[in-house]
Each structure stands twice: as structure tokens, then as C-alpha cells.
Amino acid sequence: MPVRSDERARGPWPLLAVLTAAYGAGAFGILGVSPLSPFLLTAFQLTRVEVGLLLPAVYASGLLFSLPAGRMADRLGVRACLLGGLALAGAMLVLAASASSFPALLGCLMGAGIGWSIVNPALGKAIIDLFPTSQRGVAMGIKQMGLTLGGVASALALPPLGAALGWRAAMVVGAAVVTAPVALAWRALAGRGAGPAELPGGRGPSAESAWWWARRPALLVFFGAGLGLGMAQSALLGFLPLFATQRLGVSAVGAGALLAAAQAGGALARVGLGMASDRWFGGRRTPWLVVTAALAAASFGIFARMAPGSAALAAAVSFWAGVGSFGWVGLFLVIAAEVGGRAQAGLLTGVAMASILGGILVGAPLFGALLDGTDSYSVAWAAFALLSVAAAVALAAGGRAIAGERREA
Image (cartoon, rainbow, N blue to C red):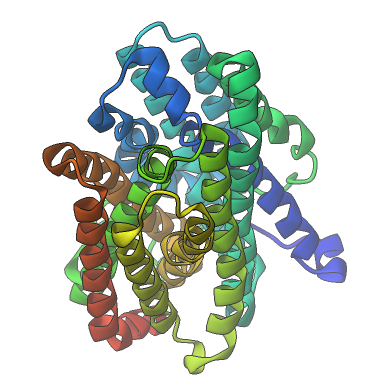
């Protein structure tokens, strides 16, 4: 992806703003499934386990398509993959708004997930191509802030729309926002094609080379930790609104505000942690992943002991739960992209997304199963607090080896 003369003069930051806005618009619709979950529960008479399938439906197909999407990003470039993925996701959300049954709704959400799976590898490739190592952490954090700001906006906007106009109208609004960048960002991303991809040693990409990371124990630990952290993120995103309404006694709109507080914490953390990882610990980024996992564990532990009527405390804890559950993603993706280097940044970002999506796919249904099996939010939150502790320990133990893989790329 060649650097154009106007980018040399202005730097890559204006283009990063375009990428971040497009990512936020996509997140508005994709993450809008969560704040609409109380309306969907009533409309389709769902069990809590079925509610736990809503977000995983979006991400299930992404788990299957993340690796091919990464290869596609390396070959076709940013504009085609980013805007094409958003167009597909928006179209499937429109179909979801017309679904007459819960299985049909899940099928449409899975179709939206295919489009969404193409977006992250394209953005990972853009960050590696546009920014030097000393700026990639903050650049990825800013880009990831688009995700959480989109989530904040949808958590605040869609529940009132759902209450006033119905969940179908709210989902159509989400779809319109998702597809807006296709028209608005097309010219800005002109020339964002794929450059020639070569692996270290001058070899082009091949089916064999695409799996070299699976033979590196440090990277398997790293991606395994991403699986666990993705599970924690899924639980918070999928069940914080229901926890707020069923355990704390707040309204559906108030539950959306708690989710917005969590998303705001994640948005601020992604930029702050990106800056910190660029400047401190000698460029090692894994210690900051350990910090976020520990914060998630502490927040979930507090949720486990929270009593009805604790809405004010819940708002503060939700913010820090968002820091711990959402703030780590940018760091995780930039580490993966740096391991892949310029030739395979899209591929390794796809692998990283597959590990995260695997966790998201499993996390919310597991939380729902624990909840239905024990009828206790305390047990469910405590179990996920222990899961976050395990991820923190794995990252702390393997941090230096993971950093070594990054330096080899």
C-alpha cells in the first residue's frame, strides 16, 4: 500500500480519523444488538440462555471467516475490505429487522457477522502500513476507540428508539449508520489497495506459511489468553443490561446507560493504554494486558456481591469493568499485527480476531447457562472473575516470550 504525497505532508492522522469514524459507525449497528436485548427478550419470549446467543450469532461466522478475511485484507487492501464488509453487515441488519422468528433473527445476525469479520483485519493492516512502531499502540487505541464510542452511542440511542418506535425501527437505524461510511469514506480511502506481500526471506504467502504461528508456543498462549478475555468481554456486553434490570432493579434505559459507562471506560482505556505501551516497559505491550485482565477480575468480583438498589455503585464499577473488559483489544491486535509484520499483518490480525471471537462465541452462552443453572448472578460473575485471573496469569508468565516473537517479525 504505497504512501501518497499528501499523506507524507500531513501525516497519517487524518486518514486514521476516517478509519476510526468508519469503525465506530459499524460498531453502532453491530453492538446495538446488546442494548436492544431486553426488547428482543420480550418480542421473541426468550430464555436467558437464548439472550446469550444474540451477540455470539454476530460473531460466530466471524470466527470462521477471520483467517480468510485476513488473507483477503493482505491481498485486496483496506478500502475494498473495510467498506465492503460494512455494506454486507448493514444489509444483513436490515434483514434482521424484518425477522419473524428467533432462528431467522440469528441467521441474519450471522450474515452481519461475516461482513464485520472482514473489517478488523483491514484496519490492522492499515495501522501497520501507516504508522511506525513507536506510534502503533496509540494509533490502534484511537482506532479501537471508534468501536467503544460506537457502542456508547448505540447504548444511549437505541433503547429510547426501541421504546418509542419498536426494536425493528431501532435496528434499521443501526443498519443505516453501519452503511453510511460506504458512501462517505469511499473517496477518502482511494488508493488503499494492497501492496505486494512478501514474507521474511522473500517468499510470497502460501497455505503452509499462513500457519507458522501455530507452531510457536508463546503465540498459542497469547491467543489462548485472548480467548479467555473475549469470553469475559462477551459476558459483560451480553448480560450487563439484564443484570441491571433483573438484579439491580433499574429500567431498560438505565441499563443502557450502565452499558454506555462500560463502553466509555473501554474507549478511554484503549487510547490511554496504547500511549502507555508505546512509551513504557521498553515497548513491551503484554504487561498492560495483564493490568486490564486484573481490572476485569476485580470488577466482576464486585458485581458478584452487588445488592439490589446499587445503581450508583454499578455505574462506577461498570466504567472500570469496561476498562478491563474492552480496553485490552487494541493492544492485543497491535501485538498480533506486529508479529505478522507488513507482509502478514492482516493474517495475524485475523488470527487474533478469531481467538477473541471464539471467546465471545462461548462466553455469553456460558454465562447464561451458569445463570440458568444456579439462578445466581453472584456465581456467574465470580466464575468469570476467576477466568480473568487465569488470563492475567498466563499473560504475565508468557509476556517476555510473546515480546520476543514480536521482535522477530
